[in-house]
Image 1: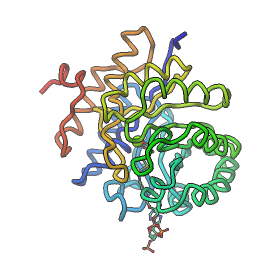
Image 2: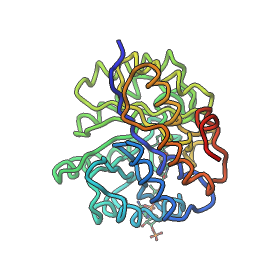
Image 3: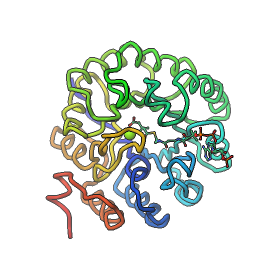
Length: 297
Ligand code: HMG
Ligand code: MG
């Protein structure tokens, strides 16, 4: 039984660009964001309020947010800790994504804390944000495999998700950070998460390191998931997860869903135009087949 509609959460401006080594001018990023909105994307990660020493590409987060908020989009920003939350609170942005890895090995490399230390800091923050009316999304990294520790158990992932649900988050975005999940594993974990947390917004976030993102999305759809994080052009990857290639490409996912008769509200022609905005500034090529077949230049 497949859904009639799917929500795409566009993560290109954040996950897509954070791994780019050469600084992309802030105006180009703003233009990219606005073009993606014109293509019909209604939920989007705009940027992240992380340490600019750790991720220089996201150093212009405040400038991005100052210019890119609007009432028609859920504009989300990432924050790793209390300092990041304070920076968010000094803007008009009302949707925050916090992020934690299930495995200590990855969490240490990514935010310099064990998973438990992160949770001790984040649980009270979630309560405070909810009291202030924020939309809170929890991104769960290394939900299947960790680049440092290998296979992660379903039990550990579900248990961490449960802590976030109990703390009051609105959404769980569960990630295959290094693109190692198989469709069988995706179906199994997302079926269990759907059953355990029927009232939460449940989103799947697949990286395409091994060309399995689309297949994993198809598996997650069958497990009842109707929300997917994707990145225009298939850009993306976490600087602290070796081997994390790009995200599932928005255009490939949207194309597949439309061919299956599932609505997304995304205009593919305009999406290709949005990719053209950022492409000349990238240090990598865009490999998605849909883009290759439909690009203008
Ligand atoms: P740390 O060095 O342990 O931080 O980094 P600290 O608390 O010791 O502070 C050191 C300095 O950084 C201090 O400044 C702080 O004020 C400053 P100083 O006194 O030296 O001048 N600082 C900050 N500045 C700006 N914004 C902040 C902030 N926090 C501290 N928020 C920290 C810890 C968490 C900051 C660092 O590890 C960090 O920024 N990590 C972020 C890494 C990141 O962005 N990763 C990518 C996003 S996650 C991802 O991609 C996965 C996902 O897509 C899902 C998936 O695919 O798995 C979501
Ligand atoms: Mg990611």
